[in-house]
Picture 1 (cartoon, one colour):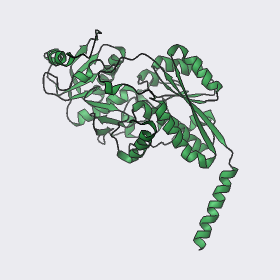
Picture 2 (cartoon, rainbow, N blue to C red):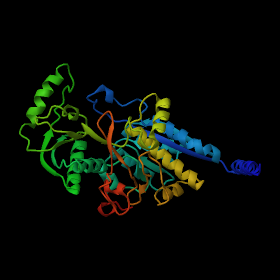
Picture 3 (cartoon, rainbow, N blue to C red):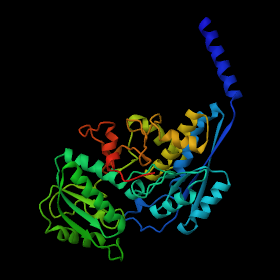
Picture 4 (tube, rainbow, N blue to C red):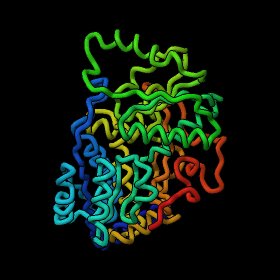
Length: 393
């Protein structure tokens, strides 16, 4: 009886504290920069119309789950813009009261937005651009990154390939700028973890139809010939962010070899089959709300808005500078359903990620692997560690 009275008294005191708490409104926004992208080789890979927005809606609902009891009200605006109209769109979102802006789009536009927002009461999150320069020479103090860098993805893949003792690589990369940058990330990863790139091939995109009724016949003849003179290798590593040729490489190589990179075994931040560490719950919430599977961009937007929600919950404040300082501090932790608390690297504002390596149907493993040690956190074995960083705020 005494225990029940004590519990009831505690509930009354808690309810009184909530009732007396000052209501805080946290207004965020998702700004999608629409750019022309080549159609993927498979229609199954077409980006959904609500990409990024769907992740934001689930994150806002998740933030509200705790916020309701604390007097915190979360609102998230949604906007689309072209690169030419991006700055105007940012100004309009700010005028509507948004202070935390999650952006998806190309690095050049995101950097321009960060420079435009400098000195203003705004905090930006990059939820799509993997460019390492945004975390190094072109880093900005008001720009945080929930998208992994190319170096992080390449390092995660390299760890697994080296662990498998597949250390002799044939690197095939496309001719577009993102493919060339991804190839450089793989060269860096190979040197860092002890793999050897035995040879490189470049797939030149000459345009034209990539998928046709007779396409598979031509490709299964052309790809082996393309690779026939390659030096001996244990694994084929593909750098094809532009999705021009990578999907054609598995099962069509001259020698029977595993394929990894942007085809075959792929490094990513999220995968629809992932069920580890409580991720089934967020998967189901997302699927119920959006009617589809969560993809990498949705997850990265979700992480950005959950970072804000976690900071506001701990601080009981939506002050932009206070939130920025807190999420850069050692006290900040965020559950990302990967078995370890996620945090931001204070030297370049990059969210530390576990990288999922998936083959299409299942997650094969999660990097960083246990065998790769670090003096602070194994997550810092992925991407540019502090001694390697050229970022200076």
